[in-house]
Length: 259
Image (cartoon, rainbow, N blue to C red; front, side, top):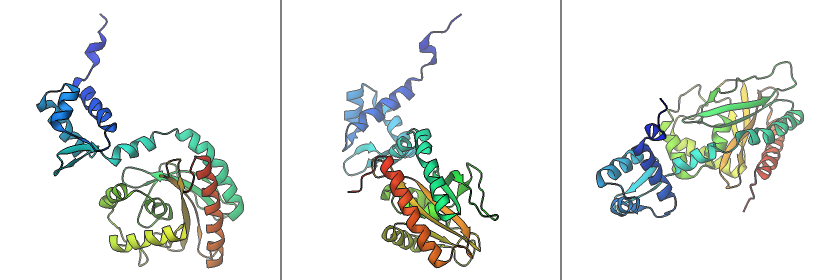
């Protein structure tokens, strides 16, 4: 016997989505009484839904105004839902171009739930070269792509990632405090690129810069990795110039226009 469509409905889920859609149209947020009246939801149900969404960080509650509003977490999910295949189609040829310019392995990665996630690479031409497996996580406090992305995140999103970070020490060069890390991010913004100067793996240097989508949000990062005997100070400066040029081209193709 065929079941009706109603048998598969989850009423409270539908109401929760209705709340999110409702608040997405109200920049300043709204109070519980107004929300329940406009959406024709009982006060008890509305209260439970709202506070569940606050607990999960999809909504923010202001004690002074008594208003609920959409958080940046939902915005972050929206960015992740953009057509990643199109993004890869744009990134891959540029990765190969960067590899051809600097001869080292060129990589692309994005932010995950708590750390960065490696997505794709163009292998370097040297006999000794770096290879990563897609999906491999990378630390945000001691990696070039982690610093490159974190430096340009909106404060509320950056603070959420900071709350997850343990600042694990890998060696004497690793940044181990939030204060020192924030100072490092300021340097990244001034230079336009980030450096992992043997902060995780002794003898390995990484140089990276962020990609921006059409809204100006850092959609990921491009970086290269190589041994310090090849990445001399002069080679680092040259590679940084190429990386910034490549990320500028990709960002432009993603619709980014610097204001």
